[in-house]
Length: 530
Image 1: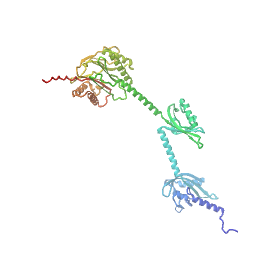
Image 2: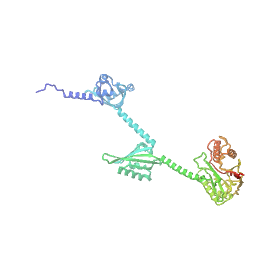
Image 3: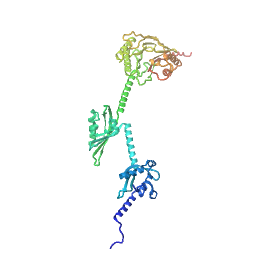
Image 4: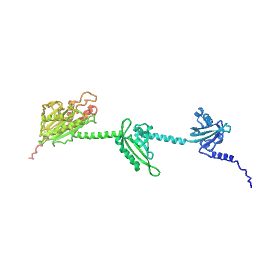
């Protein structure tokens, strides 16, 4: 029995199904244009992407989707002409939605022809690829930021694909290696050729062992740039595994630590130099205790403004078996370890000569010979002041070799000790008849010995004149006359000299001060009452 229902023709049914399919697609804008570029069909995807309903857009020209600048440049008409001529046009560009917002579109425009080859219209497929563009832009930004971070940190990277033995390197690693980024690929052996020959075997063994065992690695090695320049790289990394858990790639990071290593070596050298300076300084300026309970001993030392340079001022004090107290203060010309070592040698020789009973002339002659034997330059010289305080503490012997004379404070007065002065040690290449002076100092007195840094500063800020010994005598007299204690006198003298100079002194200075307080008057004997 024949059905009364009329069946649709197969071709018509297929066309209807295709139309329904196209209309239902939402991820792509699929629509038709007439030969003039006007919209004649519209699907759900076109409405979603472009924002127009079918009623709003049908009959409108293709140029409605373009930016004003593109319309003014004739881009819509050019695209239609290109598709008509070539049969198809594909491209990407910015388009405009109904609400004015832009989106980035992937466009395919296909020309449609009838059986006689006449243009009947166009089929257009548009995909919104804005998210893809932004993802690509973010990826490029990330790569740029990573490259910048690697450049700033001098941090490069490489990847070794174990199956193919292919190695690729980052642009920063290429820069570190000093080669063209276009050449930053090759085999592991190619990478190893960049390593210093003395380090190459160790680097190869470390990388191959990590790849074979699937373990991480860390190492430091030298590389050679094509120019022959040597750099030091610190490298570390790990092995990535495939789906079967087998090692497949070795990922490594390399950092150029050459500058850091050099700074580290400089720091170690500076620390060693500082330790040497500390030891030499302690050899020049030991901590001294009063050599006799009846005497007060104070010292001061101030480095000059060239604090990085080791000074060569020195002092010492000894008490001999017979009760004699020996004092030494001196200054080697110049600054630095060699000068400081010479000062240490002179101080040690002074101790030996004093303890073996040598008098002033023999002592200075011996120090002169020690300097001549130990100095590295024939122009190096030193000045010294040697003093001996008698066991009764009432007589002082002073011997000078080119050194400023000490000051003597007693009975409310301060004066320069007037004794013979010979040349500085190391000045003459022949023996010199050194002399010493002896003075009676009485019961209460203070002997202030110092190096020339105390009197060679400016007399006032910006002045050309030196502070000088006369000004030192005047300041010391005022302080002692005011009844200041010994420690306060020394501190105030340093402040005065510092203020007069307008800041730190150019030269080091040292002070060695020995004082005997006057004996208390005897208490009268009290007679019994009658």
